[in-house]
Each structure stands twice: as C-alpha cells, then as structure tokens.
Length: 486
Image (cartoon, rainbow, N blue to C red):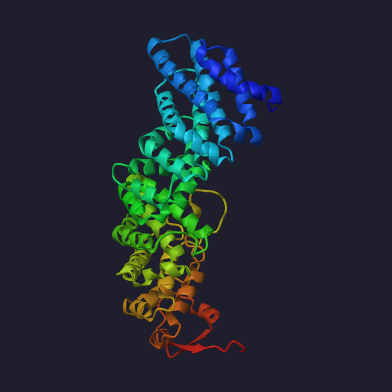
C-alpha cells in the first residue's frame, strides 16, 4: 500500500534521522515507508537530491558496520537487522529508478553504483547459516543495478567498468537461482558489441564460460540463454575462443544453442556471422573421423570418445541447418574440401555399416517396445541421412559441386542409400532430395545415372518423385524426364 500524503512529508527527515541513531527496528519501517512511497511516480519524480544523499550515507554506514560485524562476530540479531536494512536500502534505490532517467543519473552521480557494488561483493564473503537473510539484500541490490541500467547507457558503462569481469563472475556463482537470474539480466542489459569482444580476451573468457555452463546446467534460466544466443553467437571471435577452450560436452551445449537459434530465427535475423559458419565447417573437417570410433563397441563406453563423436554429430546438424536455404551461409558451398570430406565420410560410414553388424548398419527395427535395441537409443541416429542432406545442400544449383560428387563416385553411393533404415529416419527422402540437386541442369550426372548398372538393392523408382523415369534395358538404366502433365 502506498504511503499517505502526510507520511510523504516526513520521509526526508526520517531517512536523515537514521544516521544520528543506533540501529533500531524502527529504522527498517522508515525505509519501508520510503520504498513504498517511491512506487508513486509523482513522488518518485519529486524526491530531492538531499534525500538520496541521506540514503547513500545510510547504505555506506551499513556497509562499514557489516564489515566490522563480520570481524567482531557481532550478535546474530543485530547482524540480521543490518542485512534487512541493507536490503531495504536497495529496494528504495530500485524503486527510485523505475521509468526515471532523472533518478538514474542522480544516483549514479552521487556514487550509489560504487558503494552498492562494494556491498554486494562483501556479502559474498559472509558465512552464515541463515542464507535467506543473506540472499535478500543480494537479490535487491542486483535488481537495483538492473533498473539503473535500463535505457541509460552511461549507467550501463559505469556498471560494466566496475563489475567486469570479477563481480559478474562472482555473482553468477551465487547459490541462489533468483540472484543468478537477476545478475544475468543485468549482464544482458549492459552487453553490446564492444563489450562482447572484451569477453573474448583470455583474461575475461571465464565469464563467458560461466554463462555457457549455466545454459547447460540450468536451462530454465532464460537470461543466460538469451545472452548466449543474442550476444555470444554474434561474435565470431568469442565463438572461436570459447569453442577452442571448451570440453566436448560444453561444445555440444554451444552447438545446440546455435542450432536452436538457426531454427527459430529467419535467415536474415539469426545474427550469426558467416565467419562462424566457416569456423564450424573447418572444425567438422578436422574432427569428423572421431565418429567412426563408435563402430567398435568399446568406444561407446569411453566417455571422452563418445563426447568427441557427439560433437561431430552436433556440428553436422548445425551445418545442415546453415546450408538449408540460408543465403549468408551458402559460402560453405565453396568452403575448401568440405564437400570432399562429407562424401568421404559417408563412404566410410556406409562401408563400415555393410562390413559387419555395428552401430552404422542399416536396421529395420520399427518396434516401440522400449527395449535397448531401439534405434532411438543410438548416438548416431540420422547421422548418415544428415551427411546425405549436407551433400544435397552443398550441391544445390552449384554445378562445380555437382561435378565433384560425380568425380568422387558419390552418386552411386547416394543411390545405394535409398532404402528405408530405422537408424536413419527419412534417409530415402534425403537421398531423393540430394539426387535431385545433383541432376538438376547437369547432363553429365543425368547420363551417369541413366547408364548405371544396378548396384545392390537401390530403389531407383523413387526418382519418379523428382520428375525422372528410370527404365532398365539390357542390364543398364536409362533416365528419362517425365512431363508434369503426364
């Protein structure tokens, strides 16, 4: 409930009076009255500088008293009161900044940022069993920083200068979900392109790692996910430096966030620069062989090997999404040897799967019994299908890549994967899609398919869906176009 008009008039003297007396529970009520009054916009806009100066002196005094109390082991009742008073000071500061550029600037000029940050930092050093009493001022102090920063670039810059990176890192490590969410919001509010580049420096990158760790361990904290997708992924320098310093487990988290961002945003709005795509393509080329180790049963039991393979799988998923009609990422069609690597990996995976029964072998298990043999439990589910998909994307209206696949003898390889495989859902559709991209306006590829001798159980009738008719004559296949009106 808002304070009455009469109590408004008493507030300045009451706040100033706190400085002349020993701490008392009645002081908490004075501050609560002030906090409530600040919800009134008319009152908030009319508070004089002198009142805020008194509030700053109260906050400074509390900071000093809490330091002494921590050293002297002051009685718990007095200590708890000091924490409550600190929390209420922060609430008053928080409320004073709501939709008030004037108060934001006034509090900054008076020095509230410096004192508040010092107090927040000191609170992290206190050991107490009553964590709720400690977290209350921490939460309120961080909320004040958030309200101070909103829409005020000067305040953002000051908070950043005084908090980066140590205090941000310290507060992101608080064992309180609300406090972590609040400081994540403050970090997001302060960040801009220049500050993100600061994060990529070796001495600062631990802060970026901490945000990414929270994305992995506490995905319900929306602000950390927003920071990663709206800021981190837009910086190629930061992405490269983070990726290089991450474990494979952490890399998978980064790639999952990137994949989700590509899925959710239009190609023009995802914000991911083409240089990130090039870096990830190179990373895929360098590490793709790791997935082949999964063919041996012992590899799946080695956590390090498994995580390395899962990183390759996640990289492939991201590259498929990037090259799915996203114009700014079609530079990957010309990325050195990416197509060669992908075709070669498909050839190896396909050969391994045929040589003996293993994780890459085609399966016809479509039961939903939930037993351990279900294809859904395979770490390489859809991997071969996605290799074919990436080849198709890289060949889309690109005659050079179409020809390269033919030269690599990749066309028969892809046609040999037109069969249904429960380990690779939709592999037939992706194979058809890729063959269509390989044949489009490419007479040499069309002639190759038309003259292929049948190799294995490939189902060429699926090509009809692409507008082609395959006929067998004297042991060879002839490819004819089918009129759409036929």
